[in-house]
Amino acid sequence: MSRPIINTDECSACGICVDTCPQSVLEIVGDAAVVVNEEACIACGDCLEECPMGAIEEIEED
Ligand code: SF4
Ligand code: SF4
Image (cartoon, rainbow, N blue to C red; front, side):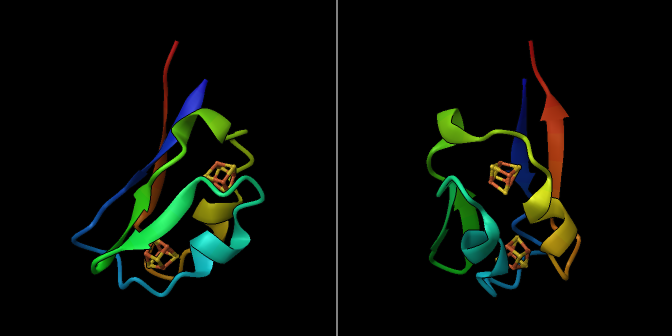
């Protein structure tokens, strides 16, 4: 399994990842995107590709 990690220092809260995610995993809370529904992530990678700030990475987990 993998899950997205948001680097809140880099995030501009543009919301692109929220709109891109097909699983509603991400939301803007305050001034950054946060992972609110991690279990639903299908590790498609779309949020990473669309983030203009390079603020998202995925980490592998067992
Ligand atoms: S990897 Fe895909 S499913 Fe997971 S948070 Fe990003 S866009 Fe959503
Ligand atoms: S696309 Fe990137 S910069 Fe925009 S809200 Fe998501 S993590 Fe933040």
